[in-house]
Image (cartoon, rainbow, N blue to C red):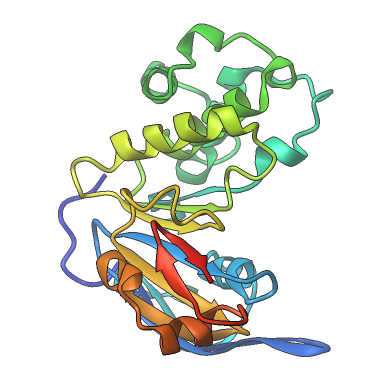
Length: 259
């Protein structure tokens, strides 16, 4: 990682994105500071994954996105940002690639596709795999691993360049429940120095509440709530009603909406 950063890691201003049939994001504005662990939550179709794709430059919205103090269009240090998606659910188990080779792929963003892998690079791969407890499986085919083990490999790939920002889009979808706790324990270990920044799209905020520092709740593409995790658990009933389509009297108890 680089030295401490004073400006926001991410600045989003008046972000709007339209699909042909509907508006998915509507004038969304927020900042993410170094060391934050931001959870993005909301109902299905609220715009969470679209927002992530906009951050990563995969979609071209209206509005402003700045990364590490630079306009996104001028930003070139993409190795400072890593992305972990729902790989365990969609990985082609027949693809003949080893654990170490998958992690090496994470180096391409910084060194280029056709640069030779050096001794220093191999040490980075080893360090990343040791961090997630998968060094002893480095020569195994990824398709032979369990869903939980595969997702650890993808975390290692995301870590190999020692990024400043990790973006995770529902990373435990498709992973056996017994591995989910293990996955988040790895994230907890990774954020202990409070220098690396995390943005996590999740449906299970109660499960990760001890990791999260801040919450953004999207409602039909709008920013329904932007607050600290403590304030999120203490929202009043009127605010909760605006965030969740739950009939009757509602409150948040231990991270879950109940009637």
